[in-house]
Length: 285
Image (cartoon, rainbow, N blue to C red):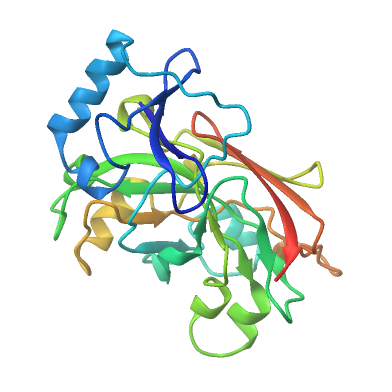
């Protein structure tokens, strides 16, 4: 299934994109797309049955904003330097264990919402990423198979980053990752039955129409199953948590000087195979 949330910011309604690309209203079956729904197999089965029966009401998609596909996000855990080619382009050693940092849930916006360039920023950068959404409580997973069984779905994430804040200002990476609007998510939450192999997805990103990133999740250093298993050794994962699994090569940070960092007026577009497409216009905060 392709689950999504549509409507004004803060007042989105749950919806489904059916197999014919038609938008359907889920309001009668669930109050929202969130961890409570994802942890309830019976509720998900009711949605599947209604979708198969063709009984879900139609929604007029014209001029209807698409919000983040997940509400009430618990935490966002991110993996740094998780692609071989990205580590190489930035001159970093290949990690021997996943590098972790956190993003606050309030960084999440819709896939076509405005992204704000922070005040004082000269090094705002782009990163297309596969996001993993958790659907059941998981602690100390004993195997990759157990870890994957806890995944409720996948989505496109844009891990917007301010490199000077992240690298040059001391302390943790978090200050360059948690600026307002720095995690567009969506358009859809795609359930695992539509993503048979999360290590076989193409990721692409364009800035002002020029292709900047063109990678594949096959290049991940730590694949999705291992990332989820590993994280569960250090923290409990709950339904509605999100994991951003890293970005391939092609970011501004890895380019020769002068590096083409983002400015107000730039347009960023990104997509992951089978998971949909985003488009953001940047403005000054």
